[in-house]
Image 1 (cartoon, helix red, strand yellow):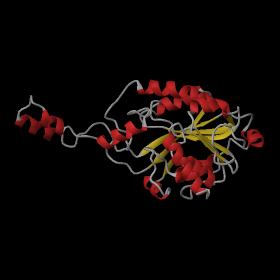
Image 2 (tube, rainbow, N blue to C red):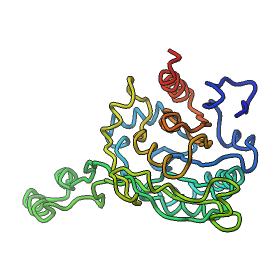
Image 3 (cartoon, one colour):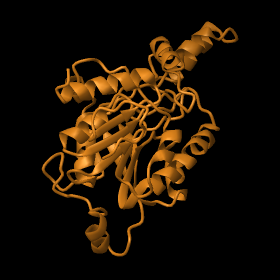
Image 4 (cartoon, rainbow, N blue to C red):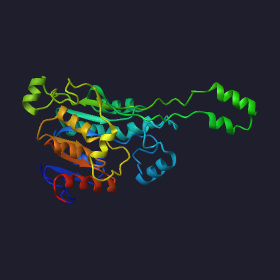
Length: 305
């Protein structure tokens, strides 16, 4: 695997991570050059969009205590879906161009906007094969109305007590989040499954890859707590994915020496999963702090530090 950007640093020929906007970097990749894409783009809720500002998001999370545990649900913007698709549509077209026939594109999303993410990938030309689900421990985020009732100056004490009693157990429409959906898409194959496999070694899934010893399913239960043992240092990223989960996806959809791309590389979990499973990797990350952390994690694994 040759170095893509001659003026930028890479880790080695089998693992390239660049601090670069993927909307620009993807255009530098050759057509039909990537075996698999596994990525976690911005959610486009609560400031997590194309205008992502790491410092502002973390300050907001500290004040509200809700940004780190999605979905938030307290602020609903009907334009979120439109903005997500405007952002993802050109990116999805690049995904389609660079992925080899029969290759899989796995994109994490969020329950409220999964439909928009899937549509962007669909209109780019992909076949939507399934919706995968990461299942994890959830934390209830719903709010009661008692606080607002108590502050209402138009209600008497008796009316407040009656309304609070009436709404006992009733909260804002937010069920405890316990899943994160993923779009499982595939670039159309050339010919039959067998013909495509013979040409590209892609298009079929490895059902020997299992999280629980059983035939792999579309619901993948991996504890969020597993992330604590996966890195010596606490990740600066707000929404990191467990390496165990990413390793499972990589084993399911690729073979050894295949080239995996994560254009929203974040803290480098996909890179580590690829290396642990003897796959080659390319990643792009626009946030310099995340890029430096990802590079450090990978170099630690490779024994460079």
